Length: 89
Image (cartoon, one colour):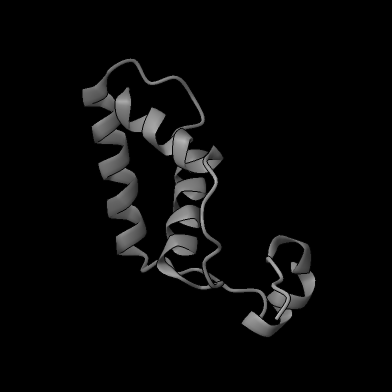
């Protein structure tokens, strides 16, 4: 499944730090929800995988699922300080 390999490579490849609340954070959260709710078992074929993901996506759209941010950008910068690079001027 080349798509899965690409997603895994994105997860482990070094990347620029994006601001909390960006589209990339939302996409990562949604992928984790998808994995936990839909892809937590073996699915025998690509067709069945497509059906499962489409059904999951339709349900998420139907309930208007949203990301529930637990803290502000300022709080994230304090709590996750070790994840953000610092630059000496």
